[in-house]
Amino acid sequence: MTKLNGKIRFKEKVFEYSLIGYIVLLLCWNLYALTVGNMQALISISIQGVLLFLIFSRNKNAKTGIKIWAIILMLSHGISFLAKLLKIFLGDEINIMELLKKAIFLIIGILIYVFNERYVEVSKTE
Image 1 (cartoon, one colour):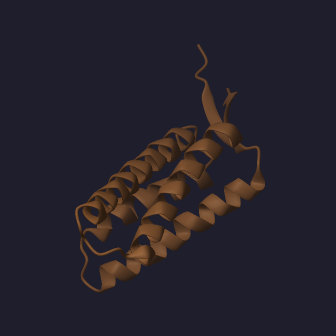
Image 2 (cartoon, one colour; image 1 turned 30 degrees about the vertical axis):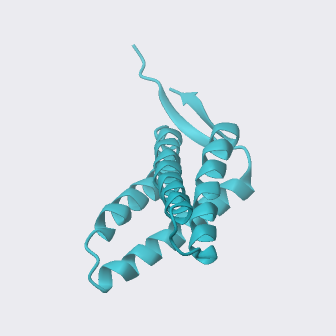
């Protein structure tokens, strides 16, 4: 009996390079956060490190990892965005930059999820 292994293939190089660049930027940001004492950054650093390893090794689990990570991004930033809108509705001061930042990260999460589904495929190899 032969064991089937899979490798991922990015059908769109722009998405691949953009995704890697985005993860590297977040990784740098979290490394900086760690140096100034934010120990919670270790969680993000670990996740981003694993994602980069899966992507560079073309591991078949990279597609699933990217999908889960994108869902976490969408949920965390989406809930944060809605909470900020609710606070504004209840009388909190409007901070356009904060709202814009939350909306941008939410949109990035959605785009990563959609592009991952469309442009990443798992090929079967023996």
